[in-house]
Length: 192
Ligand SMILES: [Zn+2]
Ligand SMILES: [Zn+2]
View (cartoon, rainbow, N blue to C red):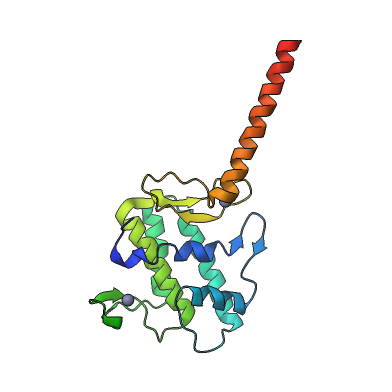
């Protein structure tokens, strides 16, 4: 799925951070600065110094703010939240032709604090999706006790679950059990 060239690479950054905490089961998957460092480097952000606990707090606050975007009732609210993320994390629009690429827009310099770099890229990724196709691609998983978030980049926008392997399978197993129960009730009814 092609959004703006900017958000093609960063559309999933927000969900990658938001899903480090499961709000239903209160499971913390980003327990320390090491886990945060892993998340940042996995997205290509270079770390010069060890991360501080204050930066971990900032990342967790960002996580809460980005979850709100997925739960926002309408585009206006979502865009307002993302504009605030851009401002809070000191977005600096500038053009660059690094690594032999054509001139293109960046919103964070490599010198910016790492969590700020992550924040503005994640915000630009979601803004690219929302401003191209609206809110319809931003989802909270339908799975039982899940509530993980995802951007549906599939062509026909048919995704309902964070993971077809986990929540999708669980849901179809539950539906199967429900059908089985209904069938056995019918059976007893007809037998009486
Ligand atoms: Zn670039
Ligand atoms: Zn799920």
